[in-house]
Image 1 (cartoon, rainbow, N blue to C red):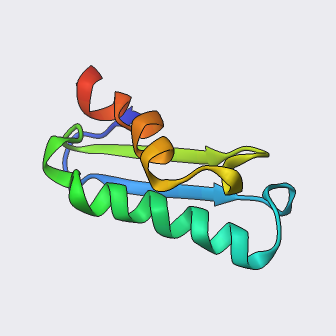
Image 2: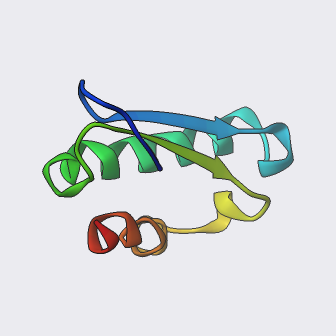
Length: 76
C-alpha cells in the first residue's frame, strides 16, 4: 500500500504464469477484484494497493483469499 496526495484508491494486480493456467489466473484475479469492489469503503483512502499473487493462490477458495486480504481493512 502506497499513499497518494489525492484521487481514488486504485488496485494493481499481478498474477504470473507460475500461479497456473489462464483459467486459474483469471479466477484469482476475479476473487481479488471482488474483494476490492465489496470492501472499497473500508480500504485506505487516496492510496495505491498492489497485490502480487504467489504460487498456490489458485488453490485457495474465496474465504481464504478474503481472509488474507482482510488485513488491508484492519490495518488502516
